[in-house]
Length: 269
Image (cartoon, rainbow, N blue to C red):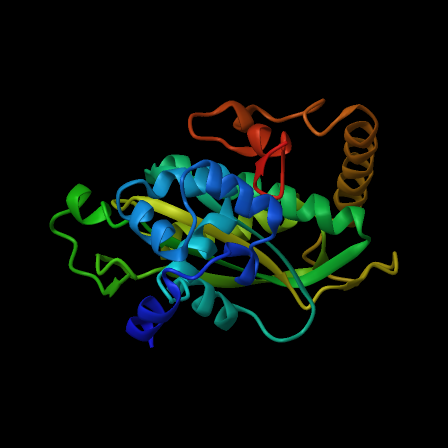
């Protein structure tokens, strides 16, 4: 259990003995004066942001391991999609985000996921998503009466939200996926709360064989135009860099895509 983990392993050295901590990550931790899991846990109590800024989404996993616990959202994420092949992207936001800013990032993530699907020649029939809220949400919305969960710091925060949508036809285009995903996001999140983690997943992905599934509700000419546009955008970004072309929303308050394009594996190059 968590108590025995703390007793037996909080003072254990070296950090590289623990899963997911290689020499490079251990060196960065030691440069910050963190030599044990106990050091990491204690630092996370007053400076959680440092882990997210330094290690990206791996920072959340690192903190969870230090406390001998798995983040609730990681366990819950598995329930949102089946065991079939999937492709997903997740983000730990750099600070508590209000609804409008979180929605901007969510939209960017849909674009990024669909571009990834397109570049891999994959399509998906349905998508799922999840968010978790920051514990400061209860300060921002003192009259919140929804379900609560306790994190590994013992803090109360609103229970996560999530949902899934089914496409009219298999797709890898944001023009098809975004309207449905954003509508689901709007319907199932609480816009009074502060957001901290976001994720979106393409479920049951399969190879795109290039054939169209006939559907009276799908404008095939528009789909083909979007395919050609996505192909052109991908070629330009591949040749000149991910930030050589971007959308107006990427400049909105709280947007993260341009910065993430400068990063590798959730931390700066």
